[in-house]
Image (cartoon, rainbow, N blue to C red; front, side, top):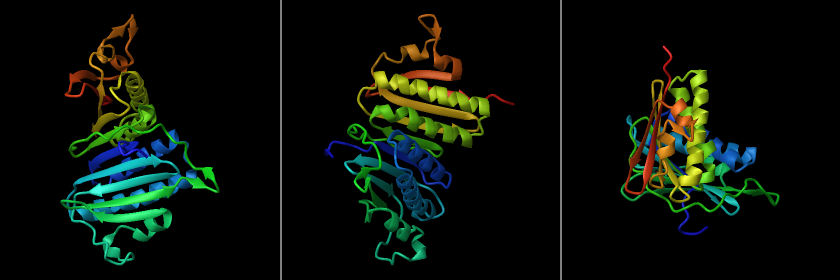
Length: 280
């Protein structure tokens, strides 16, 4: 793996119990795009869930704080890191010590390698590596090399930051993430189906307009309201998305979204889309 390569997927979110569902949904999306072996996916979900659950239960006491998950696809292995900025983990404690709440023995049983390290400035990084081959047969399809990592910045409560590369993975992963949040926001079945079409349209736009082979997204949900901010894109590329018609054909987003904005950012354009379920 080239030192300039970043994770294929990075997630930044607040450490609340409901975030475990979000993380597992994104892992399922990654597995779908990589045609991952079901047993490997089960090991991945279980181990990452244990690491994330420890952050939720112990890293920030009674409160919550940032939790960042990065997934790397390397030659012959999947590597996942889970970082927090909390009180830190006393790894000198016995692995069976229930006070850590981390299920260390589960992680060490399922991962080929597992490391628990203090982070500079406080907190813990858990690194888990999973074998990508069994009996000399690959357990997943390698994607193209991921682009260099871009900072996600802080996220608000209820907001998820997503970093993804290559962009070809966006439709499935963003779709899974958006639909998971729409479900928590109590979208009706009809409006829930529209979320598929909105994320597919955004992914198609990203395929041709992304500035590099990595995109950043912020996805948030409140009661019957979903917001997706995605980019950076080439300047001027978002005009067709926000236009009511293009060559006399209605834009998919104008038919399905309640709000569409294209905003200038330092790196390029960001597309901001809001979908609301207006049922009574």
